[in-house]
Image 1 (cartoon, rainbow, N blue to C red):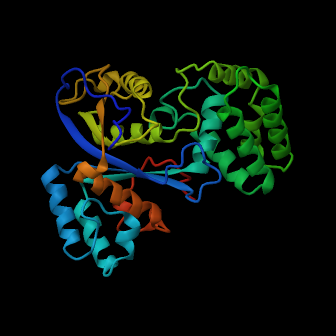
Image 2 (cartoon, helix red, strand yellow):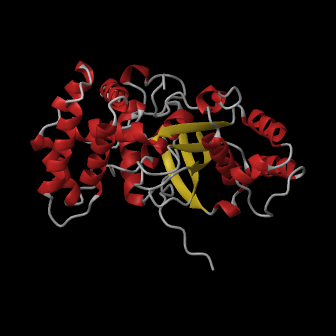
Length: 340
């Protein structure tokens, strides 16, 4: 017997104007285990296929491969006979109908350090809507990766700082974080990265940790990359012109409360600026591009199966950013070092 689906945010009101329905799934999600996972990246894939189109695509692929009668996975697909030819056909068939948002887990952690501990935490953080601090995160990421073992210790201290559930804030985790910060700074990172570390104040860090321990839900979950990935996916498909209804494989990170807050954040910041409000077809100010999100079991929805296959194929590509077939599907706002 299947357990009831959890999470989601089904639309309550009628959508405003044009709407696109997309199906999504991810690959490489490892919860809060962002540093020690065997998969260094997460891929979040989305398609705008209708059910008949998805069924037709799956049927065409299955005609030459022995897949499960209900669902197939990227590992099985890539190991099948004639996989290279089938993969090329699959990716070309999705061109213009699909998108892949890439999240480098280590870079995500660095953006979280900057977005949480140098500024006021927000649900827009980690997306194109909060780019002011991205240069600082990029400078720290690039310098830190060349700093040796102190870099890993610093990131681990941050994870421990924001992940551990305590009845009251623990001075020891804050102390360890700043000790790791100071050790990293002594490696000589260069002025831009050192300025980021110098900007970390004990008072602000303590304030954020206290709010987290008090379950302040206005702060986005620090170690959940699915939320900014979903936000970017919605922004990409919306283009400021239409609302987006998301059909998503069940994902524990996408709770109703978090999605409600994300929906409001996109309504506040995701619509076009006032000067562009008069554009034909533009979403009215204050209308969220996220119309809602419906959870489904991927076994029941062929569109989600296609998204799942695409996400898995992309994650397993050794050079996704330079792959001639995958690159046209890769979101330009993916969360990674653009020169990495």
